[in-house]
Amino acid sequence: MEETISSKKKKPPRDTSSEMSFWDHLSELRWRLIRSVVVVVILALAAMINREFIFDKVILAPLSPDFLTTRLLCALGTWLQTPQLCLDNSSLQIINITMSGQFMTHMYISLMAGLIVGFPYIVWEMWKFVRPALHDKERRYSSGAVFTISLLFLCGAAFSYYLLVPLTINFLGTYQVSGSVANQVSLASYISTVVSLTFSVGLVFELPALVYVLARVGIINGAMMRRFRKVMFIVILVVAGIITPPDVFSQILVTLPLVALYEAGILVADRTARKTQNAEK
Image (cartoon, rainbow, N blue to C red):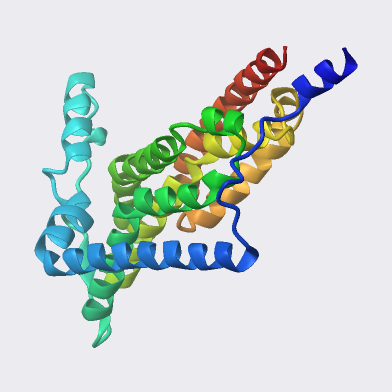
């Protein structure tokens, strides 16, 4: 009887039919990283070839009055009779002040475009590397991990690009300490703002996935996250200050979704704990 109970508590065995040595694992990881780099480079070359689309239709698009967010906010402002919601970023002048500035910006943006578009493939390669080490039950719990992680990243990047970026550009680009001082923003400064906001917020949106993993292994739970809610609010403010341009406006815009993600993480931790308890019964 005791042997039967103890056997039920044991984790399902892993598939040991293809056990590899440490060097075999290292070699597999190396080739997965190489394939990921190759995919990023190919996508970067594609972005480099389509320079006009990448810059005119994507990077510099938030400056246009026809940008989706600008049109929607202006329509909302008209309906609410609040003309302040009609953003006007078209007057912002972007200038290049270094000889190789535009060429290096082209290279940098192409690489970042390849990295962002290729992010789901990188996650898939890393998942294929980790998956053989998981037990059958852990594989079932983590089914759809690649899709979830990729979706969270793309949602975060889209949220930042369509909302945070145009609002930040409008606030910082039109802010003046004096009417005698005109705003002429360097290309490097503009690119840094757009890319850092888009990429970093995309990564931060992975918080629910991270909470799920930590809750599954028993490191955190919903009650613990509630106890440390005030401390984490301070941490979120610090993180928002690091990943955003040095202004309070951008920090507030990033802090709000981070707080919402933390609260969503509490729900994820609670649900994960319930599933774990039901599975053990």
